[in-house]
Image (cartoon, rainbow, N blue to C red; front, side, top):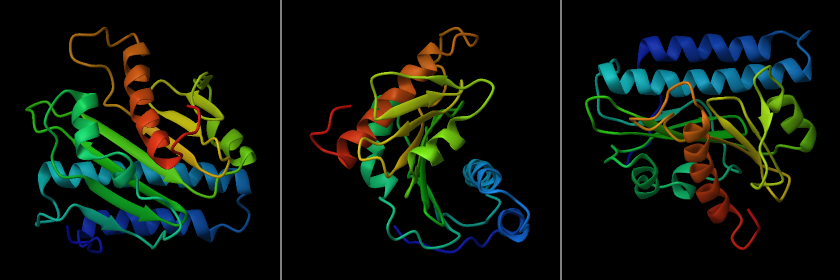
Length: 208
């Protein structure tokens, strides 16, 4: 699969403006900067998905590159298309990838008429202090039994790796069809399946 720079004007402008916001305000605290970076990552994934849905970029490439993140594990290698198909229960298209400083993301979209998406964002380095900053939120609740620490915010599972140097954001496509949309437990279980697969490949032999 070819790796190309983002060539969609709409997408490029959004990312450029967002990156400038993250780096251009010297008065921004470290905590605010980390939270802004995560919002940017979520925006990147949204833009990739939007581009795939409406073909805004005018080509078939599936990789968005904002900068090199050479020391960050490849989330598409840690969570493959076969893994995504198993979690979502539907055939998935080729992955959408993006990179930012210290960060890589990978998302898979099903080919059905009502597509669902499984996604992984990996942030490295990510200390305990970083995790605590990322995990703060009015809807965040602790999750036991996975990684060193984990937190769920009703849509995304954040896991701090057992090694203590990596954070994993995992989403398993939301609630499966036929489940109560007001109950977030099915979505959490799917996100845990995604994160567990990533951890098993990232840290073979380590306890989940």
